[in-house]
Image 1 (cartoon, rainbow, N blue to C red):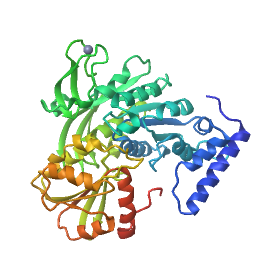
Image 2: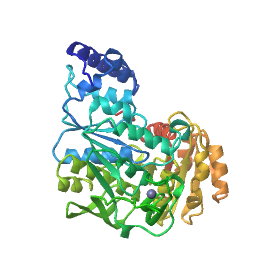
Image 3: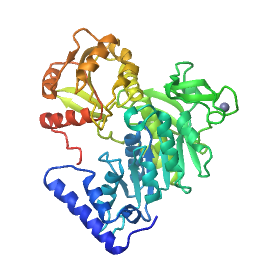
Image 4: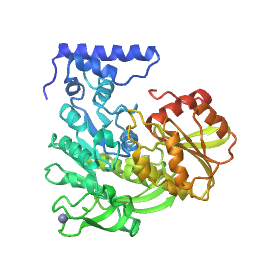
Length: 458
Ligand SMILES: [Zn+2]
């Protein structure tokens, strides 16, 4: 990729920094606009400001933000300065804003390492500009059908991104037949991560997103299942099967509300890890982060230790207190994410109050038909559910769905988040807030006013 000359670089960087400064001074957290301005002066500015950086790009349906957060914490714990696009601006302009703003005035990167969350459809535009050292794909699930098309479509988008870099080490989830199929027909080095068969269960496979064998087009059968279509799959006709993971979760030793203890094997060494963010899907995120550490040739010991002190990112198992009631916010954007959050909440076997918030704005996808295929029954019929509230632009639709799913008869639709917090103050049980993306933003604004959390761009 041709890099801009010094004149264009300085103009582009200055325009970006001033725009960002101005937006922040006027109280706006706008993440895309400075990047748009920077690219007006030089459309390849990213190629300049990323030159010499070791960059990890993380994409996939679920777990991008948490994987990036864990990886950033791990790289920093290895003693390296690392940049992270933590505002959640994972489209091209947002990434440009972040990287350009964090370069020197003449376009030199200030950090030797960067961890970038990237939208699945944007990967093919980003990769040629920044030449990443590592590309990690967490998993693929049905998500925002009106935006991405089906999950196979998303898979092909990611594939065309990976094909634009023959140097990057590719990190793939061995247990996800979609993610792992990206290893076919590429010459890049690949590191797989996954769970040991002993961690899985028999049956329960949700084949909706599993796809077919990429070699012969036949169906899969499963030797074990972790959740949804993740597990030990093999083709029912040819020899294609789940690859052996180099980073292997050998056991899950303890699942607590606030942490998980696991054993992870890599290169003949088994490490005990006390992961400070709970839920099974975050174990996969930790394994993805450790695979990146291996690809970067940094200390796996230091990185493993660091995972006991990683703090949740924005809306991903983030904790608040309302009065003296603990609240946890878990972002849920699609059926797979919802089902996993419900599994976590119900696995605790403690009484709780739940709040479901559903919007259908551009950041969420306008099509909310996915709520029909989401396992609300698991949540609604749990004996420990002591109160349920639904909110958001499409709260009325969601209320109908949860009633069908067996929600308690006093389940309420609350139109206003301030009112919701007032109502929640009278609950005596821990609260789980389960919003989708823009609902989380609205909810946070009210939480910020009422209990003083930070703005999302801080
Ligand atoms: Zn086959």
